[in-house]
Image (tube, one colour):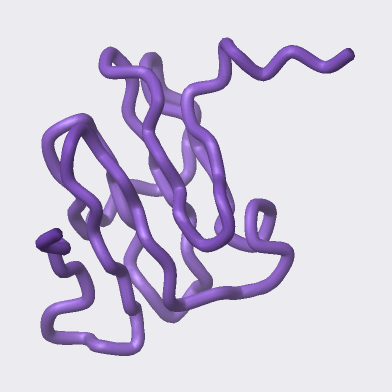
Length: 97
């Protein structure tokens, strides 16, 4: 049986959840958009390229969603963010519950 307890992140429907407080995720987006860095405190656009770095797990969006998706959610710490890359001005919105 496959044990995924040591993964840095998990995916449930359209939500990517950071599971390791000591690590970050670099979400690699389609070429027309900036990449997204996810830490336990923030989700923000970045110019970081998909190079290997210590403590950062690179994830291509088309690998986790099986297509080039531009609308999804990211949960970091206690906050869930709605990400819609089609909104150039402000694509990342913290969700209030």
